[in-house]
Length: 395
Image (tube, rainbow, N blue to C red; front, side, top):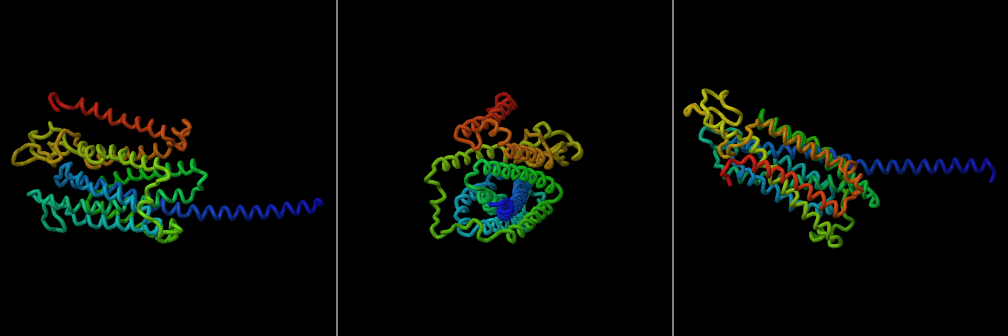
């Protein structure tokens, strides 16, 4: 061909390549839109989920509930999360990610709405109230446990969208990229959960009703994005009628099932000390501060108040025990928030800082065993410190 023909062919090829490039960019933008919408909704929800824990825990502490009472309140929250995880995959494949995400957000609104029924005033007889009527502690525990169940379902329905969309927008052959995206999203999720811990503890110090209302506003902000920004068919299986609950368990890759079981014990080991015992320890006053002579509350430290009849400092929550640090609500929330935020950021950058340099991306079973053993060290250190603090002769 002549030079002119070659130039014309090159121009044609350039135009074709440009069109393919524009089409590819448009396709990428369409694929990233669900990721952006779900990520924003998921992260906003996460703030409210972190706040929910602190609002319930600190409010229960102020109403003289014990650590065991609060632990019972969270039982259905955790169990509902386990069973929702099993069922949510089938629900998402049948009805789509938008349906599960919107349902999760609506259930979170229901959870916060029902918490308004838990009276935030306690009379001098130590009574608590439900919907303005006097109720026993046992009745309040049952009520809050059921309310928390809705929160547990909401959390895992929303989490389904946040974790699934990363796979939908990442090609199958790019597992390393998928691992990095999941790590980044999970890390920011945990960091914003820490923000929720702080906001919940700070707002409840101002007003219980204000804390609930502010979190409901965040959920209402996420709802329109989830409903109008997502395709109803996103995530729907091509043959939803053939789906069964047994399909949740991957029989072709049993390692995945073993990993899921290991994660159950991993999170249980963290929640065992972090979710209830640590806040109660931080909030409860030192034993030496109880019984100190006083004329008014200014003579007593945090976590105690002056009993005018006895003329001595008394524990604000006898059920919470003593021997702690006597921190305020905001201080407790700030420490827990700092831990969660740092935890999340380390999680987000683990591929770049740890597994990448060690050539463990994506991680294998040896990586899991290695870091599982390393994860035992913080618990061992805390056990040694707690043993050192125990008084002589204590069991």
